[in-house]
Length: 363
Image: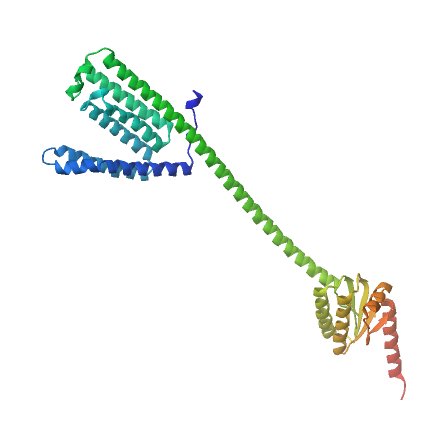
């Protein structure tokens, strides 16, 4: 029967929901005993057994709750169902018997515990208890002892007046069991599907979170690598190269933005101080663009070098760069310019030779 087959493995969420329903069932069970407790207190002198049974019931509620706390809630509920079936059967016998309206408690027990446990196998066990108890009571009252209420004795004379109601009750009990079982299974499947969707959503959220963390770590690594490359490029593109005693070369390569301009100024002044440079050649051959910002940075660096007592020579100014300087209205005053690096070096060597020759002349 495919209808009766289902996977009963429950998730932690379903178990927590079931435990909460069992707690509510314990509270209801304890509350239903309150009237019997009051009656037992008032009739303790005449019927002391009633008060004792009620107290035993409350003791069982405490044990029931303890079993639920340690993970045996379903087993304790099944034992409670067995007690309730016995009480219903006992009460039916001392009432109108199997033909009385008190047998409706069997149906109430089936529906109630099916809602509490949400387990088809537990419902099957309760159904077996009810059928065995009701059928056993019918056989007992048919062949051994009639019900306590004499008003129902006339129905136990045999024939359809006695047999048909019992069969009808058993059929109704079976129909109730099938309907409730189908509802439990459908609800169980729906709940499991929702739980699976929730777990899948949580799994995807965790995967997305891990992916975001990985992307963030990658971005941080890329930024670190980029910063290292920039520092390396700055070191390579802003080297201060000593050419000869007192002469230093600063070749510029690429683009001269604000950050590199500041770095160039710091490197130039530090190099002049450390190398005791008297002449600084700034070669612009490898500079890609000489805009307003780059021109201002060059003039600022040249003036700062002059304040330290160094002569500044600009070389490698292209025709396009010269046109840009003229278009921007920038005048390079106080700074010597030559066509290329070779010419600058030749002029410096020639000046040094002239100075040596002048110093060797007799006065």
